Image 1: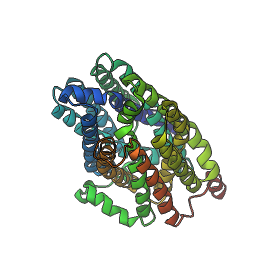
Image 2 (image 1 turned 90 degrees about the vertical axis):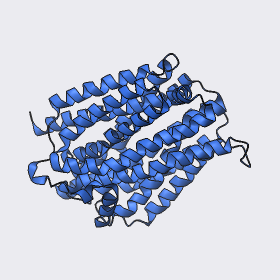
Image 3 (image 1 turned 135 degrees about the vertical axis):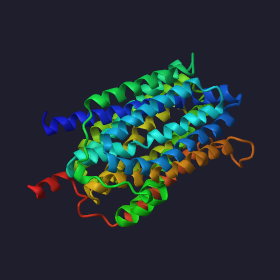
Image 4 (image 1 turned 60 degrees about the vertical axis):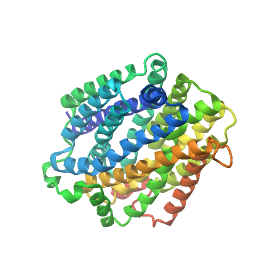
Length: 417
């Protein structure tokens, strides 16, 4: 088997790994209000607050465990970490399917956050096997898996959730375990022994990982961009279901179909456009263009008068997907092979730390502006806040001094040949 063929098999496995995890996440979004209502007996407003807390628990565990997972993968290799994470995800979905109380749901989401920290290792694996000029495109495959997961997950969850809110989670558990078995058979190790380093406790805690960013002066300010982007992004999982059910009276299946459409569009952007557009216009311009589209789309969501308008703004909003692969590529070029796991762990921790706060804040905005306490009734408050966050992200990015390596991939190839 040639090296390039081995890399293709590895990329396929990483793609499937993220796809399975995102399918499971997609399953829970349209059925979460119904599941919380079943477990607590609360209505839509109370369910929205619990929904924010569920995401809070997931993100909190991911924040604490991302640097641990990243450092462990730098020490023991990417392969064992990825396979064990998939097994943990399978256990998580089984617990969710059997959860008798809201406490068990929180426990399952905590385990999912721990396993979800494997994104750190997945990104490091991609950095290991990708030449610099192809990293943005290969990081885009991760985004495509996110999108495809949101095609299958919400559709399955929305439809089956109308009949049995727990059945989709059994299906997700089986998929995760099957993928773990597949990885054990086909996945090869990407990190050579000579590029590994010993496990150090200061690298394996979230604050230590964030402190490590100071050694990368160009990367550190970009984390401010990531914070604002993640804050905006979390308006969707925190409020989309509740917003569309309240304002447009969508059913669980209707929410599932909308997320399926969003996933399909996102898959096209990450799987096709990122690989074509980013090398053409360069990573810096791709960041700006994606952020501008996000600003418009979230404002459109906030003021949409009819349900079909949400679908129209999805087309615009999907182009924000150009920004994150470009940012990942920009940052990965600033560190060496032995530091990719640490970098991706720190970056994931930055995003996870933001997602600890963002869902609660966005859920609160929705709950407050749909209650009698608000000075004005405005269900779209969280989406408008997300639009402002992306505008600020573009402003922060403009203040960062561009790195000379961040130019179109064609120019990089020409210089190397």
